Amino acid sequence: MSENATAAATGASATERFQATSNGAADTPPERLSTLIRQVLAGVHATIRDNDVTYPEYDALKAWLIQVGRDGEWPLFLDVFVEHVVEEVATADRHGSKGAIEGPFYVPDAPEFGAEATLPMRENERGLKLTFHGQVRAVDGRPLPGAKVDIWHNGEEGFYSQFVPDIPEWNLRGVITTDHSGRFRIHTIKPTPYQIPTDGSTGALIRAAGWHAYRPAHLHLKVTAPGFRPITTQLYFPGDPHNDSDIADGVKPELMLAPTAVGGALDAEYDFVLDPA
Ligand code: DHB
Ligand code: FE
Image 1 (cartoon, rainbow, N blue to C red):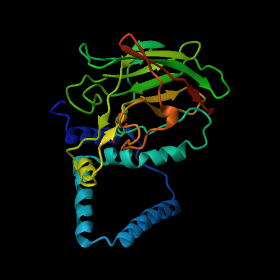
Image 2 (cartoon, rainbow, N blue to C red):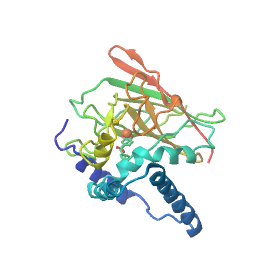
Image 3 (tube, protein in one colour):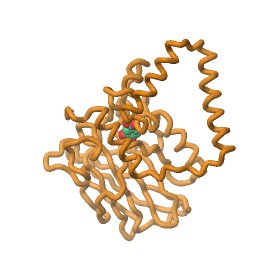
């Protein structure tokens, strides 16, 4: 594991990146904001009453909240513990493929490729070779040529390019365009179980609560086509020791790949079905 790949490096990068790419402003009306905040606070108040929370515990919470900000770990923390419910609510009415959390490590504008491509990787990139292929269709069964399959994932060290030093900029990131029959074929390596940075405040909380910090190995994807609702999702590998205890609660049965081993490499097929916009 790279010595530079500390929580400080990963967390701070995620924070900078979020500020650089998000629109920030929500046009939430005051009444709605008031309702939301009141309900969050009511949950906090109930937790304090139900558990007789003490002043030392309250002070520990304050100190920890301050430290999460100093570590730049709010994107990490929120995407691990909160985003999965936002995703669930946002996609509840869809008929097409299941989505999953985006997480903190997406970067837009990755290099573009045709329908079959090898993701950018280092000459000596370690890891089991993986061919990931499939078709993008509409819910009515129509294949979608020209759909974009934006994929990003980690490598054997467990880190994402652009969030730690020493990994080439677009390593294991790319945008693939489906062919005339909506098909794509991506050559890459199998991702690795990812451990939430353990040396920052999120890791400290996880340790103090006696939890483990792992997400199972996963591919991240955004699938888009004009006139259709975009899908942000993740795909997982059967047998991963963390599939049943994902710290980020991102695993769904529909998102499990069924890879086959072909001569020391993996072959995995998955089709994406998009809802009309
Ligand atoms: C986090 C990291 C991920 O790779 C992911 O998919 C979701 C969340 C995180 O560190 O917050
Ligand atoms: Fe991830």
